[in-house]
Image (cartoon, rainbow, N blue to C red; front, side, top):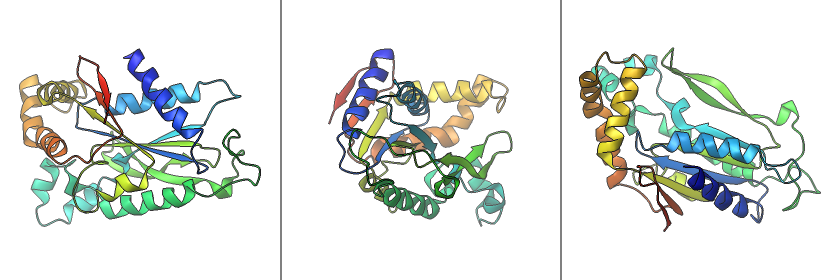
Length: 248
């Protein structure tokens, strides 16, 4: 995957440094088990590891922090279904997420310095200018308010999640508010197996058979929705072992 990571880093970085706004917003989407989270984390690490003279500080914000909390799920009329289907589009605070992305869009276009230009990164942060995003605590199984800090020296912000390119009401607004869209596609059966194994390794299910049962009741259904209702991406990465990529 090193070659793929290097390609995507170059694709993002080369666009960010000539972008006509102070900050560059990237959306990385894909089905459960596609490898999108691994990709987003690897890109963030590599971009932040560039030499200081050319580095563009990068922050990754997963959309997991916008899961409805368990307390909110308990208030739904279909409470039992909501817990089984947690992770489906309707189990997220989509309105809150869209509001957050709108805020990011305004922030991305706000110059932080009169001297800022395409070759000068934004200045060091002051606490009053720090934005916050919710994170998700997998141990507590709930979002954490203000779990992620976004300092004003951030030049590249990567949003990562299942539904960032979903062609459904509200969700489809995300694509138009970011500057670059990446989709990680994968053979759905390969992704299904990955997620089933993940459930077992995480202690969520005791056996692989139970893992597949859980996947087929939720994750695989979500993967099919994502595959069937995807908006166009600027770059498509193959997250299956073939590890090929293509520009749309």
